[in-house]
Image (cartoon, rainbow, N blue to C red):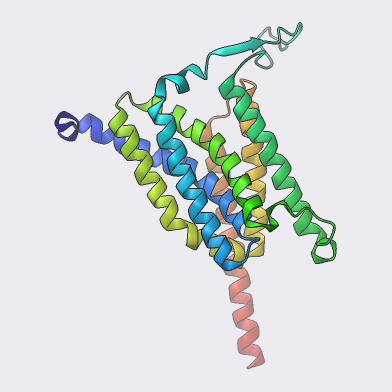
Length: 258
């Protein structure tokens, strides 16, 4: 342990891993914010705290069985589909699936379905509240959804950690720091998302995209995360400009009315 504290390489690995874990945690936090946002304020706060606490517990539990996690990448079955090759002979998609692949595909499908339902709910408007989905209308329903996605994001998070360092203490410290950042940011992120309806739609679009990326990853078609987060950053920058434009327009209207 003392050797790790004195090692520049260990600190560099820790900083890189914390950054990566925080980036991965943003996806989880967006989902928690949207699901808990449909609850009364007190229950929403409880759901966020439970969701983030479960994220930490799941990550630490998975780190404790790290050998088993590594084994999740071993194929458990192969479809062996004839003609699963592209035009130049390369595989068009993976036919051998591991437990990690199945978890990512299942989580991606769940995320796409949930995001699509929420987008439909936002577009349909209040007139359809009585017929729309109400899975997250209760605290228990919200927590169940958070647990399901916590499991998916936790597996992805730990596999990322394993790929970046072999030192378990560094992994544990990075996960704890990243989840602490999530806990501190949960309230402000939720308030910001709820106070800006267009941001809610943008966040749902992000969730839909993340779900599709998880499905693609499960089928062996890895999409570099740099592309994903660059696109998300560009969309956020455009939305910030729109928000500034609306704020200034409202300010001019107030001055003209006064």
